[in-house]
Amino acid sequence: MAVTSKTGPDTRNLIARLWRKKEARSVIIQIVTLTLIFAALALIFRNVVINLEMVGKEFSFGFLFYPAAYDITFSPFIEYSSRSTHLRAAVVGILNTLLVAACGIVLATVMGFIMGILRLSTNWLVNRIVYCFLEFTRNIPVLLHILFIHGLVVIHLPVPKKAVNFADTFFLTNRGFFIPHPVWEPGAGIVAAAFVISIAFVFFFRRWAKKIQDETGRVYPVFWISTGVIVVMTAAAFLSAGMPLSWGIPELKGFNFKGGLAIKPEFIALWLALSYYTSCFIAEIVRSGILAVSHGQTEAAYALGLRPNRTLQLIIIPQALRVIIPPLTSQYLNLTKNSSLAIAIGYMDIVATIGGITLMQTGKEMETMIIVLLAYLMISSLISGFMNWYNKKMALVER
Image (cartoon, rainbow, N blue to C red):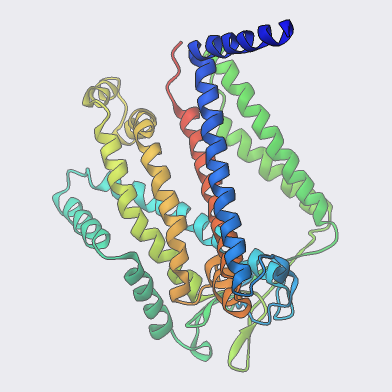
């Protein structure tokens, strides 16, 4: 009895001491909050399963291993046919989503930075043209842009027999842009290994050069040395392996082109529309970031003899990035999520595959939506994580 009477007060005193400490109290609150959240999610999930059983549906992901029985016309990364499983269709959809998001982010960033800088041009005509384009584009829903570009590609481009021919190698038609496809032969692994090794060397060389610059002030031509190492090592491996590369050239057979790589009009329309639409928002972010840098920085650079383009490159943009990166992350996420509108023009992304045709075939509404949500959550987390790392890397460091 004596032991029991001492244990109670000691436990209460320990909890009281922990609660009075700010760090411990914060941890306790977070643990309790997470416990309540997971308990609520478990309750919701249990109710969903019970309700599905009441209407004769079993909560299961076994349908993923059944044949999909539908075609996907654009699968540039992995082989797919109508005999493939729903799981493979989901993978194709995720890869297509990643492809259009990555290409859109690159093009939108380039266009956004160019238009953001032009918005600050002292040339009245250039400034007004860019301003009108930005305002016009931003105030029209992105879905209309997608449908407009898709209509231009499908209606106004020629049929395959009258394709726009570029040196009998590239062909532009209303069924897509047909380009040569690389075919790697035995020995390509040596080239790939040399390329990876050169990238690793460049990574460590850049870190070493930065360390030397910080310690001594000596600057190495990092860009040219890095480029030379990658090109020379890869080219040497390519030649020593007997040039293990050939090209599959598109050829007109019947009513369409065969061979090569076909970039479908749905991808082209979605990529261009998402890119120039998002670039208009990025342009305003870039403009505001540049304006956030004190004009005294520009005047000091001019006083030191720097030209305007070098001032922008070396002085203004590096400081403006601290303001640009956080809202830029939001635009990248918006572009990725807006890619779900691809279903309007038949581009087979994750929404059109697992969240569209698979859902209608199997009747697994809950399971397919969970897969779609997790896919977008994964992609958004990757983008946010990378941009947070880059934002931390670009932050000013006090010495």
